[in-house]
Every structure is written in structure tokens, then in C-alpha cells.
Length: 178
Ligand SMILES: CC(C)(COP(=O)(O)OP(=O)(O)OC[C@H]1O[C@@H](n2cnc3c(N)ncnc32)[C@H](O)[C@@H]1OP(=O)(O)O)[C@@H](O)C(=O)NCCC(=O)NCCS
Image 1 (spheres, rainbow, N blue to C red):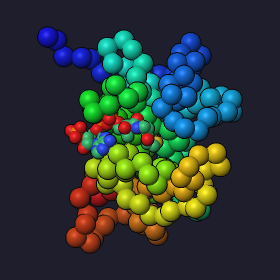
Image 2 (image 1 turned 180 degrees about the horizontal axis):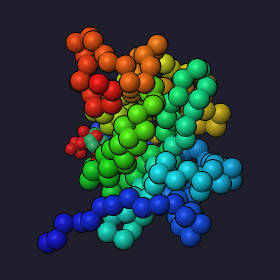
Image 3 (image 1 turned 135 degrees about the vertical axis):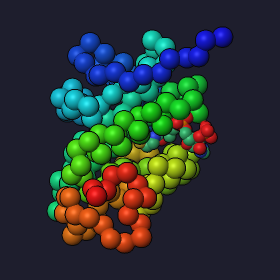
């Protein structure tokens, strides 16, 4: 048997309906027209995941510059249930990690997850994300309504781009500038 081929592809006006359908199946919240309009202009920050020729996953991010920092926000990252545990989620996170590494000027990557989404929390912890905050009543229409903020720190507060890190943790991840 030949191995399945997994790859990422761009979101375009021709396949945006597949992204909408996928997100409606994978996530308990729905996303509005503005979300999809922005995604079409997001370039490398939005990708579809293909299993052979079938769309089975997608990742959509945006750059967030609130709170005096430059952060990458993962709005959605999901894979259809029958195609989970095949490395597709990992490929999408790796794409995001490569993006921030190439850019070199992000403080962190973050996202919200429903507090009962233990699978996703375990998944993200593998990549160095940790729960940094829990927001009560974050979701309006789903239960539980609380969300954890998962964050992967790339740069400590006050550390500017290009600064050499002198503590013992330097070099533990690939995103710090040396
Ligand atoms: C979270 C999610 C994206 C993971 O996608 P995936 O394609 O199954 O992930 P991978 O196959 O790359 O998993 C990599 C590793 O993460 C961990 N992991 C993934 N899903 C897990 C789960 N449900 N429970 C525990 N660990 C899990 C495992 O260690 C796994 O390695 P293994 O399969 O060799 O044990 C997927 O479960 C999903 O789409 N969930 C619904 C959407 C969602 O909740 N997204 C998160 C908020 S944006």
C-alpha cells in the first residue's frame, strides 16, 4: 500500500467554500463573512490541508498587535475527525512555527480553546504551548463557555529583536535570535 500524501495548499476564492464547510463541521462556533474575507487576504497565514486530494484540515491565523506586543493568533486549526492522529495537525502547527521563525519578530503565538478540549490542549503542549490564562464566559453560545488561552512564548517581555539571550534556557527552542 502506498503512503498517503499530505500537503498544505492556499485558500483561494475557488476553494473557500470547502474551508467554510470544514470549519462548520470541526468547530462548535461559526465564523462570519468578515472572517472569510480576511482569510482570503491572509496569504501564508491561512492554509488548507489535503489528504491525497481531499481537503481534511485548515489553519487560519492573524497578526495581533494589541497589548503592546506583536503576536500570532491562531483563530482556527482543525482536522476532520476521521483524519485525526495522522500528523495533519502537526503539519499545520509546523507551518505556523516556520512562519514565525522566518519572520523573526513575533513575541508569541496564542489561541483560545474551550476548557474541556483536553485533546487539543495535549496536542498544543507538545509544541511548547502552555495555559497562561482562563477566560470565563468567553464563548456566548456553547458550553462550557470558558476558554483557556494557550500561548507559546517566543520572546520575553522587554527583549528586542536580535537580542542575545544569556540565561540557561537560550537555545531550547528554535525561535530566539542568537
Ligand atoms: C487538535 C487537532 C487539530 C489535532 O490534530 P491531529 O491531526 O489529530 O494531530 P496530530 O496527528 O498531528 O497529533 C500529534 C500529537 O498530538 C497529540 N494529540 C493529538 N490529538 C490528541 C488527543 N485528542 N488527545 C491526546 N493527545 C493528542 C498526540 O501526542 C499526537 O501524537 P500521536 O498521534 O503520535 O499520539 C484535532 O484534534 C482537531 O481538529 N480538533 C478539533 C479542532 C480543535 O479543537 N482545534 C484546536 C483549537 S484551534
